[in-house]
Amino acid sequence: MRDMQASLEKLRTDVAEAALIRDLATDRRKRELFTKLADHFATLAAEVERAISTHETEQRAASTDGPFILNVGSWHFSNTPRSPTFCPLTGRADIPPQGRDFRF
Image 1 (cartoon, rainbow, N blue to C red):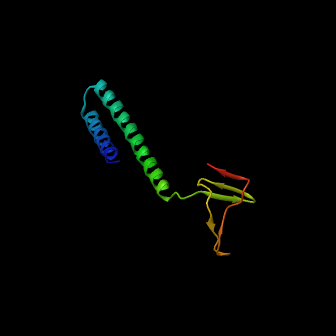
Image 2: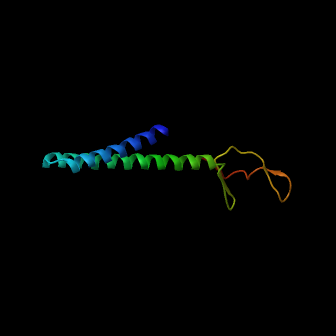
Image 3: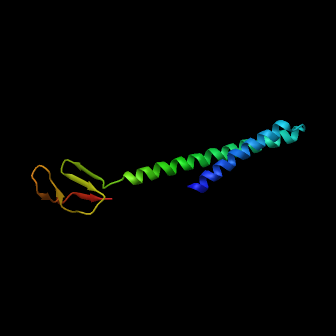
């Protein structure tokens, strides 16, 4: 993650430098070239920033992921192996219904 942040900062610096050179250039072709470079670096910086954001979102989601259990009627969907579950109402361990049990 630190290397991505460093790359992002480098790209932002490159955008600023290319824009500065573009503004100081007297030749039309050089201005066009450095305009394209600044735009390209800005696009790359936006893509790296999006990748960092996606990575952070995935990390947050992974850290809050617990077992996925969905009960719909008599259907039981789970991404964890079948095991007894504690029922707070009855105070006993109940095994999820047999038969229509799906695991991911």
